Length: 110
Image (tube, rainbow, N blue to C red; front, side, top):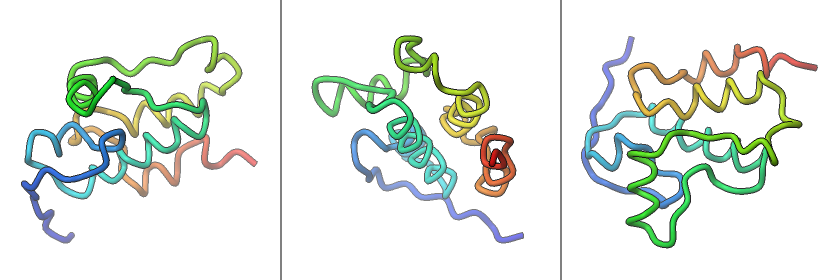
């Protein structure tokens, strides 16, 4: 298995940046977070962590729980919500991997 390279430069687009990137210690699992943000937006039309400016968004990424507003998410399958939840796990050590995401039940639905 390849050794994971830890990165420390805080970079990224505000809405898509993973918590560990904001803390300055991350690896490629932050890409799963960003893809989870994209999936969340595709499914409901807005990002999960919002704010009036970058500072507020970053604060919400770090501190606010992931929510699924029933007004927008009641028609979304439990499998889709589970995948999004696992992709947006704030702990990058327990966050779903790319391979696991591809094997997720929601990805297998035809």
